[in-house]
Length: 174
Image (cartoon, rainbow, N blue to C red):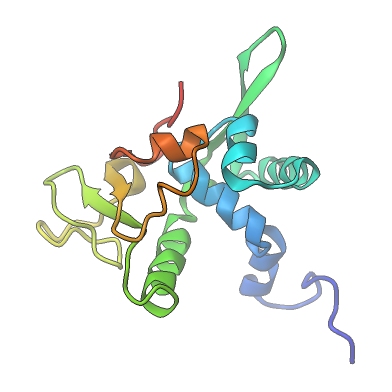
């Protein structure tokens, strides 16, 4: 039997979620939004994603309520994409998948380090501050390059900005 093209007929929340965020570009777009990327051109440059794919994924994420689209310039018209509460709720998935990859794909080497801004403690793989024991919400978390970061292999504006620590969800570029 051939594999279906979608999961819409399955009675499973995971299958239906995969319809929205299961494609690899989608999760990378959402990841970059947590890191502070908001503008189409910055997603395009950092991800090396085809324009048509990026446009389609952003449109689908806006329609699904994962992103809000805000105009930041009138002439010529320019929009930015900001995670909604629904989008921010994807953080544990992004964080867990990245940690799984560090453990099982990168031999335990972290590309990004996360610090709880409330007390300065390291955020563990479960999203909890190792110092104070509080859950570290994305807006209370700082991201910095880890020992596995390939910051020297790319020179786009997002990669350059990611070379310094900054708070998650805050705009990365002016």
